Length: 180
Image (cartoon, rainbow, N blue to C red; front, side, top):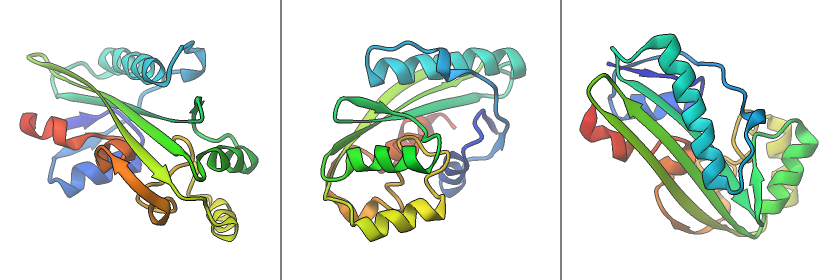
């Protein structure tokens, strides 16, 4: 049994699909206070901040899993969209471009500590404007780093991939399976 310290339904789905027993409780950490020079540094600071908050709140008697994901394209860190217009701007930056999705996670207990930062790069075809509008209208982009759903809307636009889909979905499960 592990504690997934995240409100992400996608991370919970990944654990369920791999048969990992877990409970899920989120934790408050204000990412807006982070000043970072790169997407990798941002996601590391966010994960470490969440980990410290959750460790204080829950302890480490049950192994604790904390993760954060950031999307980057055209040199810009693309966080969760604030509204539909922001989601459209973010997705238009990704359309026809290389998109890097970086996930950092900490898996820890009283007897071990694992920190991993992994990246998956996608090369997208240009998004169809009607499909993009439909996706925006669906609100499925809400709560997603970079408004990006590689398992959903973005999937048919993938030209090539370097890395693991699980990383892009927010939890590099392959890295923690040996420990659960």
